[in-house]
Length: 377
Image (tube, rainbow, N blue to C red; front, side, top):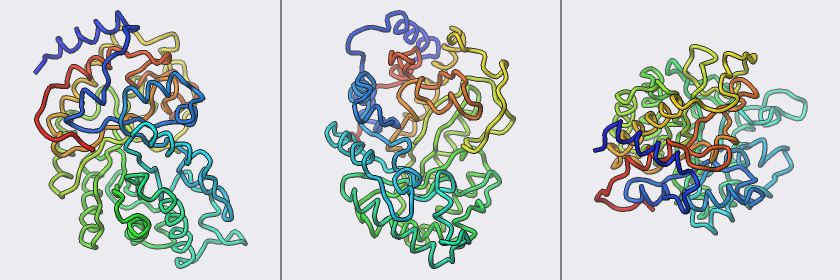
């Protein structure tokens, strides 16, 4: 195994020659370990951004749509679905032989208010909301049956203390809204993989709540395929011990572990909470946006070292893992530029704003070794 110093040396060598032709592909380097994916935006999967589309084709063998399959986009009104962009996402994936993920069916965010209300703006009854959930899942999953291979069925239903989030879904339907969502998704495509997706499960209390949820679903007959650890990390959280323990904990439940939204926030924290709650919004401050003119070399190397540690841990647990997906392709289109403070300049991914590999890219590749086992497909 390469030392940290060797990994950083290799990372630096690539950084000094960022325009080398045909850089190695992540999907090839880790083909014996796990799928390597990215969250795509419309400019990428429609080809409007040809350079980033080419980067996706070269580097990745799995894809997740960043937004276009979320309820507010695909089903913006009670009497209207919009499949224009989702159809193009699926066509891009099929043309380029990507393992396609659907994200996400049931979530408390990016779901329009009308979903939970009747024509008079009053809360729906349990029966009416179940019907609405069923029809949405049947329509969306059914449209891509056999084409989208796995679905984030329920997203972020557990609070930081391990209790269940009091979302509109839970308030109106009850705790079994999660069970119903999985049953509806399985009925719509019995062969699709079904996932539960969540952030900050490396924290013990929240992890315990998710374990309880998965066990309950399993006892109710749900064929849940994998847990999605979102992987919104920073330079000093989580520890590799916490990450390894989290992977082991869920693997012992007999399910796979996916890293579904990987990025590393290199900017100062806006609060003391470790979270990926998209509803947070803090006021701008120069002290919280220190790298507007570029990332200092020392931070660039810290990012490379951090990614090397993560992928070393992932490979140590590769037999329990199926997919590593980055939440974005280049730094320029990362959500972290606008969360939890709008207009910041962040550098959380492996490719810079010009689509060129960063030292972190080389550091990740350096963790890949020839390994026995079957290629994931």
